Length: 224
Ligand SMILES: [Zn+2]
Image 1 (cartoon, protein in one colour):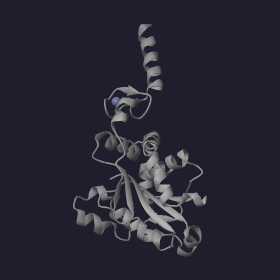
Image 2 (cartoon, protein in one colour):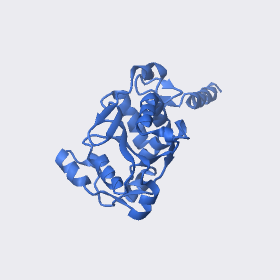
Image 3 (cartoon, protein in one colour):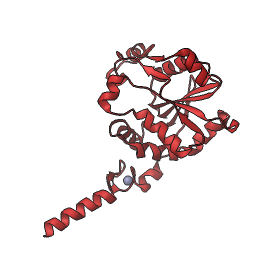
Image 4 (tube, helix red, strand yellow):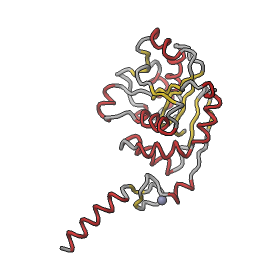
């Protein structure tokens, strides 16, 4: 009898507090407990080639939350981080002249079909969805513009920076350049990535999108 009550209590606690805080490892009702989450702050960094990262990837909590986004479909982790960086993202909106009332087109950095099938979802799409949830009037996701070739090795498998850069050259393509021009020419576009390190991946994606002549295109990564 007592055993059964304890089991029920444990499952109830799992429902109420389904997360382990990446900072203190205590069970919590959010992807990170409030106490630990207060300790982190966005550290926006403007990299060269129109790339911006919101958080410092060297922060342990950020690293763990991004791991969840990447491997455990962590939408709420993405949402929590996006909310935390809301002010910076709003400033970015000013930069992109959001006041013209036209929605900014979000392009989640694509994965190869093989990779997508293996993982079951695209983590950059989770981040884009988090942005849309926060400001539905400002953004529109379009994941049918940019595609990734099938034979590209995951960048994480390559240690050397030079090999990473070489690996990703021409890794992306527009399905239909003329069609894409109609969709994004003279519009503001943000390509979404999870982590930008060498910048090679985002730069290749930016290069491809630029062929369709958007008004402004930037690469936004959650961390860098
Ligand atoms: Zn904590």
